[in-house]
Length: 123
Image (cartoon, rainbow, N blue to C red; front, side, top):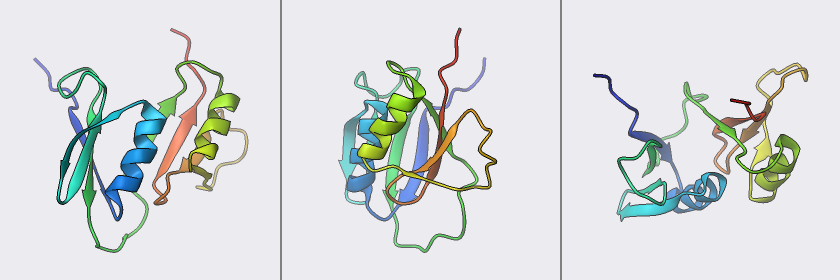
């Protein structure tokens, strides 16, 4: 028996703003709202194959880059079209020292959390 990843916790200053962004990116929905955060996840809810994301409100200052970042793949379009969509909903390019030869795009969400848009993988 093994564990599975069920939830990811992302501390942020504005949970509502990031929930709206990540719901649009991942086609997630808001599953629960508390005073200090919002849980988003797949439409089928908690317990499926995809983890939920808890956007936990904090006023603590950022201490540096996250040690964990998300990698995402488009499910119904090519990488260039998905890059356009992500930029239109609030992502922005991020520079983490890439050379320009990478097959992925490095982006940041509205609060500056870096994530990568990968090329679609063929099974």
